[in-house]
Image (cartoon, rainbow over all chains, first blue to last red; front, side, top):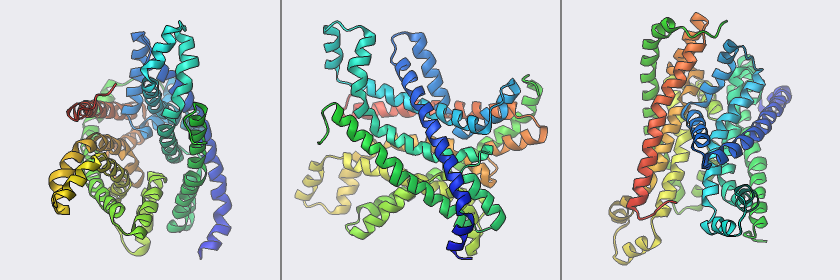
Length: 223
Length: 225
């Protein structure tokens, strides 16, 4: 069986899996961005209780393996009476895990805003809330977007793990096809290629575009 | 199913889990050793003055970096036998982890080499040092401290990715937990123990690396705000 007849027969299944992978990617990205902002802000809080909670959360999720967290959400939470669907468990686990990494990036970004900006806001008698919202936060985007782009590519790769808790994504479909046909090189090779294409030609250019946009917004970019 | 934590069950399975932890640590160690060497090879490909080699090298690195480790594991494990190369799950796992993280480490090495000021290279040239001598006595001693934090981070990263090896049947910690859980039909304790063991091992490691990073920065005269 040559490669084209393989594609003709199984291509549509793999594409269906790709759609699920993209869904996981988008949902998990939204969740992780929200969590990163919340915990990143908590991490720079002056209130030591709030800061402590954020630190524990971040250390906990960065200290254990994503796969362990995923299985914990899917297999252990039902013991506590919380049954999540496989898709939800996958999105929540990935979102919370990457949220912890993202929070550290946000914290780094906030601390990297030049001291003069903080002092300027202080001198102009901005309230702490206004200072964050109007002065500091708008400036962190060009700083945090490059590491965020890296993290998002990592997230795309991490979505493959949801196949292990029975979400029917690209990896799952590739495994299924492999089990039926034993054309391992074709099915896993195609899956690898699809992940590569998504990352190289869609995700990364999109994130670079965001970087350029953010840099231009604060007047740093080439026009 | 009930959410009660059973201590007798915990102590019953704990020895087995601790043994499996040794396997996990071993897998991480071997994988890391391979990755450091593979990283050097990729670095070499990057720095050869032949354009076409650079290009191919970069594409390979990009490809490996932007595809999931899980499928790479499956690929190596299932495809190599089709070409008559039958390797054990352990060997496959180590090769894949070595390749995958080797690409990341090559970037760390590159960053470290570029972190050495250009004037150092120029001075070596001016003093007519050989290439070998330049690297051995001037550049590498300066580049190594820069590379330490990144290398440490990826050691922890490999450690946290070892559970993936269980999918191709390497008997490490996570594999043991799944087996125990399936046997007794209780997943609460095994998976929680795995999480705790990971925390106990990787949080201190990460803290140590952060401390190292700080001291390296200090030694280099860079102060972090």
